Length: 205
Image (tube, rainbow, N blue to C red; front, side, top):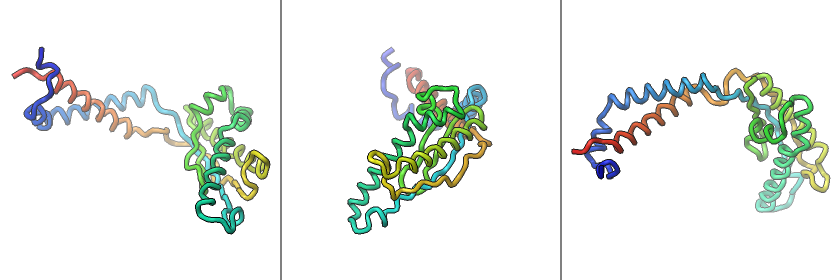
């Protein structure tokens, strides 16, 4: 049995790479398994709304250096991210859309993309496409309202920062992960596992 766990030889690797039937059939089987998983346990739908965040650097720091502006952007971006994920914002979202907990909403439903100056994307996942769109739109709108209400306060963002919702979430026609991704990952995983077992349990010479 010493051959079972011995490292593969060069000949073993060459035979594996030449086994075109294994690669062809393995990719097909893996793709079919990925497609089956997609239909048995489909990923949620994903919707997103967009908010334009303008830090107005020229007004906030008219005569400062690039280094100071960088720290200003970093500090204010962190404040805005805290607002977006705050309990107050989560509670306001759940007032109109929710029969779930704040933790589930924050950890499993919502995701913030591309925080910084420019477009902020508010993503929401749900098995119901209309509910996903409602979560994303409400989150973006509540965020804008809270930024405006907290702007210029001691703990809030700088008064020069402006947040404007530019895109309302539409009912998503597709799920958060495409079928092609399942097919590709299924094929890769099956071929990787097949290669491992082929080399691990190869017959002794």
